[in-house]
Image 1 (cartoon, each protein chain N blue to C red):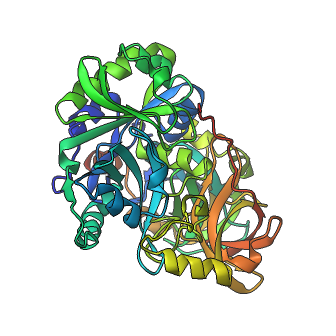
Image 2 (cartoon, rainbow over the protein chains, first blue to last red):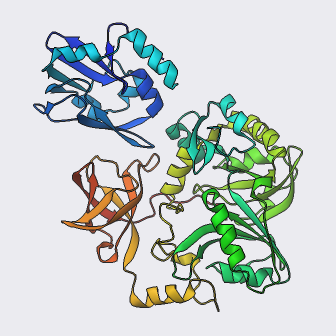
Image 3 (spheres, helix red, strand yellow):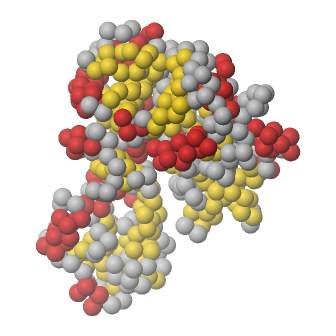
Length: 127
Length: 368
């Protein structure tokens, strides 16, 4: 199970990559592996205002549909449309394929996320 | 997982990468390698399923025929010995108790194969409808294990392990005395995938060896172990109903679209009067196939609309692996059920357009 050192993680198995006031958000390798073959991804419109834990999209495997919740509050400034056209890319590289980028509205929320070590521990408990 | 029921193969799943889930109180593998790969293996080569959770009821006695003929909606009188019949079993109001296979072993001996989640309910129902008939019912579910080998290469693979010429086992017939890899089995040419293949019944001891031996024999031919995930996508593409989705106590087989298996011309069977009336009055609800006109995937339980009006519910839906379309089955108000009819499916609070299409999503490849 791949976990990248430089990222932050949520309990819902999302990763957050901070870049100044901006954060890229995707799902982790653990998440893609538990889902199985991803066949559909639904993402929000640019400019959508999201509060922490809001549903920002959906990800579907052959078997089931799951909501994706945003781990940090902010306005959506970019959406990865390529992923909508090729959802299976998430299975190939979960960290190379972000879902959305948000303009962070409260950077202190980042302190509530896990580092790589803490996240690895969570995964080992859930595996 | 500890409180769940397990088949004798529970300890074998791990060896093949099986991911176990709770299915109707049973610890069963939802997938091994992955649902898509497993689905394609069955369509193009072959797959092996552990279906030991299925229930079996042995029916014996002088009135065995009369009992079964009254119990089920299809016509058991057409069966010859060692022939198999698919049939719904109904309540007096036409709602469905279960769908099952009836094996005829002789005039005084039938064998009923029922769904795992319905075993207790079905057995109670059967006993409640014995009346004064001279018939003995034995629920032998826990003593019988079952495998299914399905796909275009199923026969070729199974033939490697038996001296019985499998050509002699015709579509929906069985041979009760087949030695497979040294294990005594009953083999029938039946299944739940839309492909040719066999269901293999044996005892709990033999099945562990059988599972390993069949997988080993078929490895070079692309045989894979298959989980419940692909079992569902396979049966769905072939538009075969699943109890709990297309069929339930609230849905008659006519409404579920399997009226072909209801023989209203029979003298009597439980549910006949209600279904004769349903048919005479015209069906109010109908099970249709539909295709999404946008990219969303329909799922079991999603609501179906015609304009603003809620007209039904999706019974099963998928991004269908072989058909490669986002399609579903839905139980809807019959007046919106014609081919080409425009519907909306409510997907996460968004209305997505869909169109009624034929339920023949996938053309079955049976060897008849």
